[in-house]
Image (cartoon, rainbow, N blue to C red; front, side, top):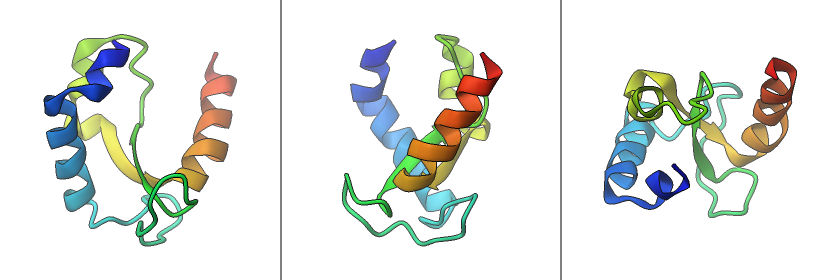
Length: 83
């Protein structure tokens, strides 16, 4: 499952999400221009945690562009609450 993030298929899907979302964080509206690990670097986030579900993982409608800063704070907090 972790290997999915290193696949060419993921890189292509990730790029499609970033382009669809115009490199804009879907939660804060900031433009994602940074290079990791900058707070404004782009992260493609699963809206519904996939928890190893291959269909959820690859579903473009379950993905959104967010900033690293939002992802590392808010998204992680949401996932902890959901557990």
